[in-house]
Length: 112
Image (cartoon, rainbow, N blue to C red; front, top):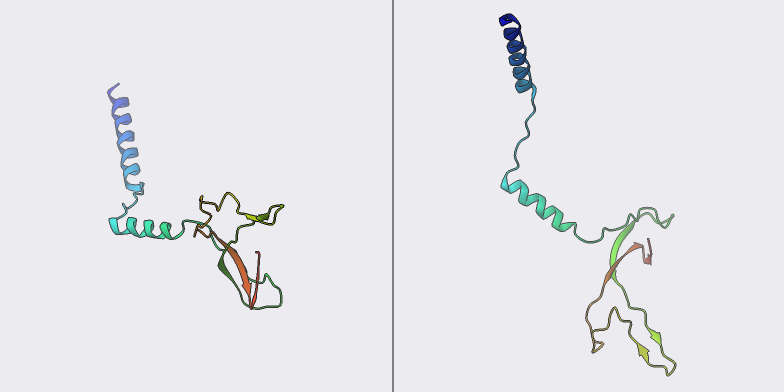
């Protein structure tokens, strides 16, 4: 009975040694690395530009640009324009202009 117990203890010890020797630890991130990652993520907030390469076919260089989106207004029966609710602030003089991505190829601007 003592021999079996010793053999079990020996195999357990060897197994634990192998486990400790071959375990891969990972390095903890330093504060500067964490701040750098946060800065990179902050720059990615919002929409991403579309891929505009070869969208126009013959033009060689196409690039993504941001342009202000103009609100769609409907004219009433009497000819007075009514601003849409998304852009109305009560006095109808909001300076908020949402931006959207477009592709620019030469002097042409089109939807991606």
